[in-house]
Image (cartoon, rainbow, N blue to C red; front, top):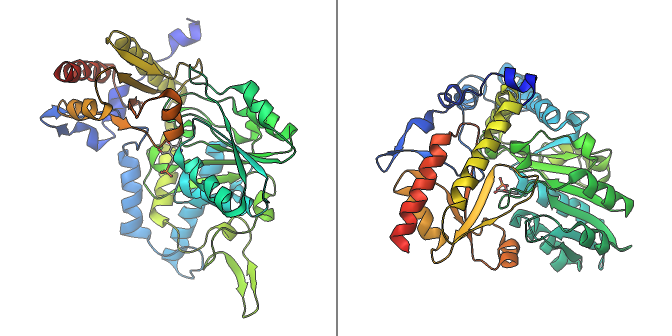
Length: 413
Ligand SMILES: Cc1ncc(COP(=O)(O)O)c(C=O)c1O
């Protein structure tokens, strides 16, 4: 350990926990142990208050207003855009489009970029994608005859980079990949993946839904064309997420949806679109939720992020050590570069049964296919149990999780 590391104050998890009112509740007479953070994270008081404050004090529709409330709401809404840009290290707020979440952001790119594709053009995905980064591309396959190619996942849960390079042809126009897997925890080498895509003349999108939570993201450093994430996993409200688009992509692509807010002028003969990024934000947005997302980003950035992520890593290591002692247990995702998510199966026990029994002990984990059917097929399992960690989780909670798992297992086998 370096002198600097030694001198770091210990991460104060209790000081963090008191900021999350839900964490003090009980489930089935036991203290809640919330390890379903990869599905949706809990919200700190600062976010709850920011959203409530909009409803109580500053609510009005944004942008076109000529009164005080509309101006206050617009200012807070647009301030969130700047916060997202800073979170991702984007060059400026004009590169950020607000969406409902990652799913809508990927649909936007598949639709708007997809309009430039022709039959026989190719899109590369990987076997570890969430369905939200698969289905929009299947729409294009069905609609336009676009060909989807797949990067295989190796046994230890990483992308097969040689196979990736071999997939490109002169018809490959787009690559769309998860930055950090929601099942395996694997962090993919975003910069290298981007260099290879660009060297082959293809644009690239990263689904940063998990990565934005578990690591600092630097879209400028990665050099990608598009990056998406969702606010509710980053301790923010549901209903607000974002798309980052590099360079002049937003200028070049046609809008995704039409309606109010995204136009400069409409006549009987046609439409002049609003400037970017508003050209991509048709209709009234999720005003309070976007402002709440800004508050969540403030909250995350006020953390000692290095210490928080080290703490998450320690929880992951502790969980994996405990799981290795469980007979018949198979772990998925053993990449060196991995975020705080652990997935496993136990021979002879259905993941759903395990999760339901663990709930009796107050332990919330997720079980199922995690919206990743191709990955489940790759490993030959119908589903896994997944525990995912946040900085507010404790070592004692990981112990409670392992104990509940042993009890659930002995009930079933
Ligand atoms: C990797 C990944 N991508 C995309 C999504 C979809 O996010 P949302 O439902 O918020 O759009 C999820 C949600 O679980 C995810 O984990």
